[in-house]
Image 1 (cartoon, rainbow, N blue to C red):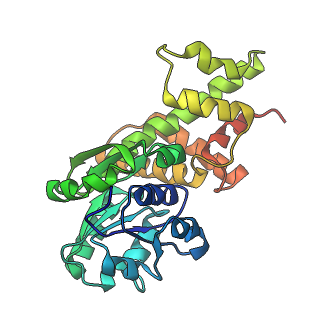
Image 2 (tube, one colour):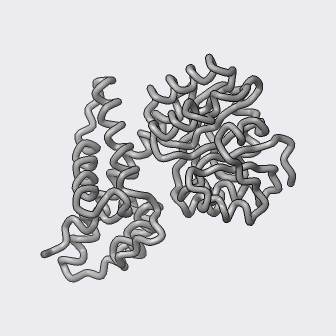
Image 3 (cartoon, rainbow, N blue to C red):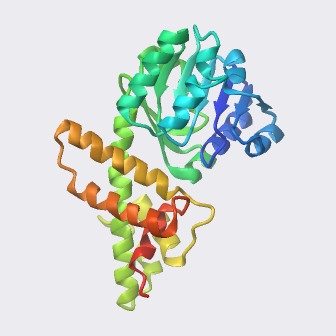
Length: 293
């Protein structure tokens, strides 16, 4: 199937590269950009054009997708030198797959619209690198119905589920709810895995034994074996990303008067992983916090 819109993708990281490769596999015309150009080479090999800057992508693309590390990276790509705001944007839409705060999303979207008329959707993703490679991601969006309808055919190449949750910022709020569940589940699975191992039970049997019961879940089936076997490469997600998201949950909870005691504990556990194993460690290394010394 070939695309009727010209597409761009900014950020060739753990998620961005496999997502962009799915767009190329679907026959979409695609220009890509990454701060370190070498990471864009697989996309070039798949037929994408590697652009010199975000502005270079935006000049020729009708829809610009991007997946970046944090709000500071998004801010720089949008408003920095040769950023999206530096080119005419009327009739163009940005779909931001990055996970940033709802407030930052609304601020950046409003400022970009004022600068050049370019529209904005927040569309954070869940499903990890495996979901990105398989096109089975769950994507939760914030923005207008018009923009959602426009980008949906292209997002469908990358996601199994694409849900409009409400106006700008609603997608990011939904992603924070997602991260409460995922981050808390990682912490709980680490405890269950360690208890099994310390009690003389093979933790690798837990997914099989609990399949179909109330404790069964995708995280149980995917995360627990990686914890038990110490498989952390390639990573399904970095510690710094999980910590950033859980800290954002705690801040939003403070602003809205929402009690989140379990998430607060999980965020401190990931802060320990960050301190002891480094920000680039895989989030599932939370299991290693309970290792006997």
